[in-house]
Length: 353
Image: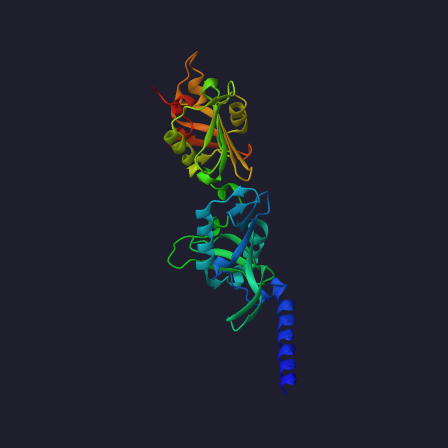
């Protein structure tokens, strides 16, 4: 009798596993609920893909080192958290009326943004208490359209559904479509350097205006032993101020740029700047041999048409400068107030008599 009961239990478990595997491999089961746009458990979201019908697409992935954009850029943590909060709060206000449904679907087909949500879910979920065999699964696919006429709702359509809905956030007056942006620039982190001292292998500061002040700091061990090399002649600097050098190395913790200029300045203007002589070059190598490089260019105080009126002296902006980051893909505006502490000359670190 015991053997029969044991066999019966095994058969039941196997049937449950098979059923879970069959139904778990298809996101189309969600089509039974055409209005289930919200994601209650945002902590389980592992990947977000957003794309439009033109040229923009953004893939956000949760990793051990934070959210990553398009497999190579650090994502803006606050922007991702804001997006996940939106996913959690959105609610359906009403289905689109029959009279307007056809026109709304046509507009969605032409201008909507496609959103894919991936989550870590169990193959087996018994009564929402016993959860086994977690895996990543595409759980939602929907399209986000424009705002309603009163700007208090947003049109959305679940993939494979027949009827679109008006979606809103309770307590929020406005539309949510702008939060589902496919543009990578809207998701990129403003962080340039974010390294702990224990994560730094070396830092190089090239001062092109005063080459004799260029130097490289190498972290030799975790006991506080460093090596400073003057780049102009490869001379080793032994008599340095340890406290000042320590402050330098710990200043790479959270350095951010002010704004991205890729789409704000004309391409020919950007090309002109990056083809000019830079004033600094910052190169940080971490313990994993990953490099972060920033090429720094001066910023004139006035617009070009004003600067061109000066024959010799062109006023330089003493508050801001330009930077080329992310392996040359992003042209940004940066502040001396933020970066001055890592741009000091070699002489600053040498002990004075």
